[in-house]
Amino acid sequence: MNHLPLIIKREYLTKVKNKSFIIMTFLSPLIFITLIAVVAYLTQLNKDKTRVISILDETKTVENLFKSSENTTYNILNMPLESAKNLTLSTNGYGLLHISKTKGNVDFSKSVTFYSKESPSLSLISEIESQLEKEFTNHELEKRGVDLEMINASKVNLNIAQESFEGKKTSKMDSVIKLIFGGAAGYLLFMFIIIYGNMIMRSVIEEKTSRIIEVIISSVKPIQLMLGKIIGTSLAGITQFLVWIVLGGILMFVASLILGIDMVQMHSPQQEMLQQAMEHPEANIEVQNMVNAFFHLPLTNLIVAFALFFIGGYLLYSSLYAAIGAAVDNETDTQQFMLPILMPLILAVYIGIFTVIEDPHGTISTIFSFIPFTSPVVMLMRIPFGVPIWQQLVSLLILIGTFILAVWFAAKIYRVGILMYGKKPSYKDLIKWIKY
Image (cartoon, rainbow, N blue to C red; front, side, top):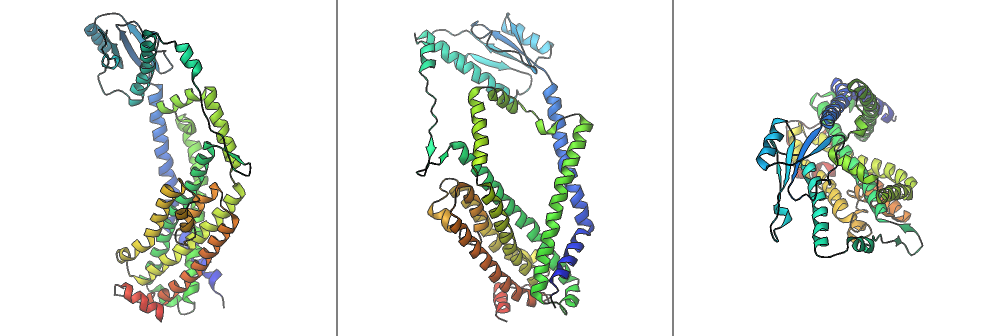
């Protein structure tokens, strides 16, 4: 009789009814959203703070350069330096920007000093430097008799058009979007395997140490028990993810109402600079290119491939985690067996980051997208760049075949190791169990 559905149901219900599982399911999004809300609230307080910056320009060249904004006010001073310092301190000003007179060919960069009571904001200093650099450069060019209007008119903005030999047009933004999608898919699989693979391993160890497994194994085949644990735990993990998404959205909405902030639109100084840049026509063109790049993605292929490779990769590694759990008596003994499992995953991530990004259709990227222990991550990173369907199918078939083979080997370890107590197994012992 096939007991697999009953085992899946039992494993799923055992997991979702577990107190620690329930607590972490509801506590994790609460902690996460609380952290976001605190950061958003503090950011809002920092955003509402108005910074008053005094400017003492002895050269009289940049007095009108800085324009006051909602959170930054610039005051022009005309007095000795020491008096300006004292005035800034007495009025609790944020800082004093001093531009001293230069004699002869003294470098402008040595004539600017920012005085403040505490360390100033890095973004503020960078913004001031950027504006002064442009102004001083223009001043030097004019002093040398260079026509600035002619220079500005002669500037050429180049954006190389990209097109395949078949006539398909692409852009640099296409590559960026593909990189984001591929990297997110590979990293999500990597984290899912580590989190819920360890959950499967701990579940096997708990039942083994409590001797419950001796009762279960008398009426159930080891391979059915192992598959039931893998599938049941996977469904519990998916349930937990869905609860996190729903509960996280509700908590974020409630937090935004209570604190009176919009956490989705938190503004840091860098984001404000970005928002100002977005007002320029060039930035609007980039946004349009980003939208077009998204719709150029093979979305159907991505969704289907993500589901298949995600499931295949997770099941492959989960069977190995279950075998390790059956072979040991406690989590401490699992360390010697974890490295051979984690190394291919880590290698896949590094291959994806340092090779697929640079050359998605190169020899290394292609080879590792067929190796079953790295293909779920590497192939998911390659697909956005355009991978022939036949390569995806071959890689998927190899992955499925390896999963079946891994389940067969893991079941052999599982059926012997699940009843072994009091001994720390070695790799030699595992080979013997496989031969039984």
